[in-house]
Structure formats: structure tokens, C-alpha cells
Image 1 (cartoon, rainbow, N blue to C red):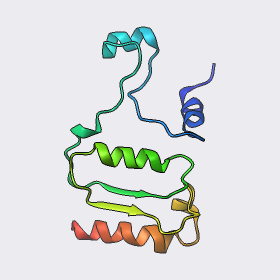
Image 2: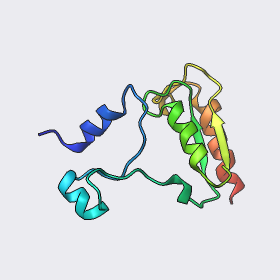
Image 3: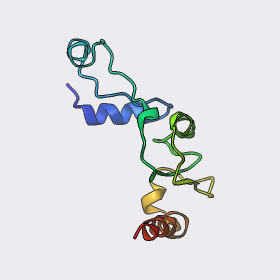
Image 4: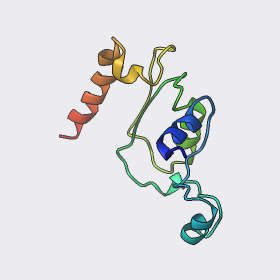
Length: 116
């Protein structure tokens, strides 16, 4: 039997999906959530005013359709909404790209400095 981490990773690749609470299986879901499937998160309940989104057009793990849906469901104004300017930027580029310092990290640091 495969553990949940590899399965969750497989579910994320290649297709947009929406986030649910942890899926314990039909029986335990029924006990915990009152329904057989894990419910979706209700992002409209988020009330934080310090939400910064960093995303790219072709992220293989964080599809832009999911980002748009998340933004539409939020009831609060985003602190920062940043679509990386490089159209070839993918998920791993946020950490490993040669230009991540300029495209991502500088903006993160600026945001962090603004709350000191």
C-alpha cells in the first residue's frame, strides 16, 4: 500500500484540482466530516490581511486555474499578487532558477521589510 505523500504528489501533477480536507476514507470521513468524501476548503472564511501570492503561468504543481479560483473565493484583499514575469517559470524555479533572486526573492524581502 502506497503512503499518502506519493499519492498526493501524483494527484497534483498534470491537472488542476481543488483542495480538500484530508481524506480518511469513506467511513472515517463520515464520522469526522458528516459526509463520505472529504470536504473542500472554504477559502472565503480566510480573514488574514497579509496574504501574498507568488505564482507562474506554467507551474506543474500549482496550476494557474487554481490560483485564479483561490483568488476569486477570497473575501479579503491580497497583500501582494505576483505573477512571475518569466513565462517559462515552473514550480522548481522558485527555488533553483538562476534569476529567482531577482524575480522572486527580492520581492519577498521587500514585503518582509515592510512589516518590520
